[in-house]
Length: 459
Image 1 (cartoon, rainbow, N blue to C red):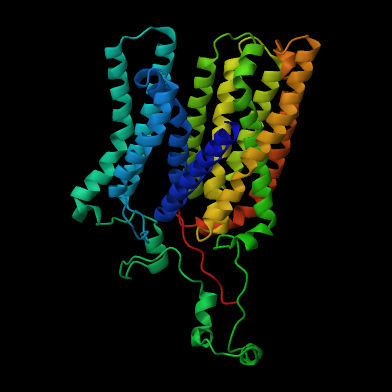
Image 2: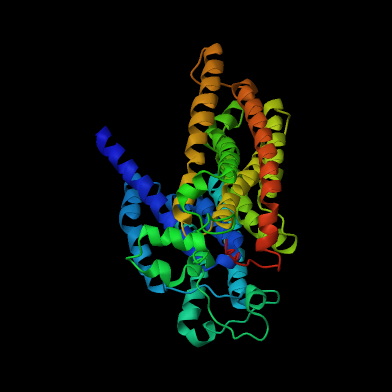
């Protein structure tokens, strides 16, 4: 029944959002010194997950909808429960661990190989009829790539003594914060600000009256708690009233909303341009989207450490490239469809991922979950406005002119592409403004070549 399907979709979509948010927030807190890299890896795997399910659906589940539903109902929970054994609480180190960097590089390499392999298998399966034996071999290789990062927790579980030895890298926050002669120790990432500690035992007393508090403030014995500054931990209501919060949300909304419009309509775009089989076109966008997500994390992490360049600058650059891609779409030059799709896939991946570490760096990790979840609203809102209303209206209007329910020709999306090009141009301008505003924050956070926690002032 329709209402049963509606309930199932609501539960499934919200469960996915809850799970992905919990995984992202947990890993951002566990590795606060490598936020761009962590976000890139997690969002990259999320980007190629659809390709993994497509291969499983085609090779293992024999394109059976009932088998797919059974796998999603029973298989995924069993896999998640099995992986829980390797989940361990950890205290973020005060300095960078060289072994962690090696693990990140290994995971990035494994994900790249997996993405390339999935793209290759998808093309082969689309062009060639495969026997069952060959299909199972190809699927086994996919599973091998998927499970390869599992070697890291297995190694750290079996060789726990070696895993606990931390080797700080040069220029790490451990040397910056404590000095060369200070003893190495683990500092909790979410520590109270010095403003709170300055209140001393006065505020620890539950029975201090308001009159005593006012008198103490007047005499200078107690200092009023100030609002957090950018780079410190914000509550959601404190971040909500900041101009940088809304600038980041609008830039994310414009960039991701434009990209998801093409993603939602890519099959129709291919048919309108005369591409009968859009499988390769969709696979190309998916692969380039993965490249953008993973690459944006690594690239922005490198430049934020070496040049203290805010990650939002890369959002501005990719929005400019998106303008070019949309213009190429609209002009419909011969041979530019796949080039435009590849460019847009990469830029969409950049936009989708870079918001994550940027929000955590500006507003902290203590309430990052709710801040990140609100930022994500830019995706569905953009899809509703740009894809559901704009692209849908233009497509239906052009199809009506042709006297058919299916529109053919570049006119089907030309107006949409020009409007989206203008939207991305506005997004790039706002992103540059945001970059200028937050550059001092990044110079403070990454002045040593590695992330350092901002020290709260006493006033």
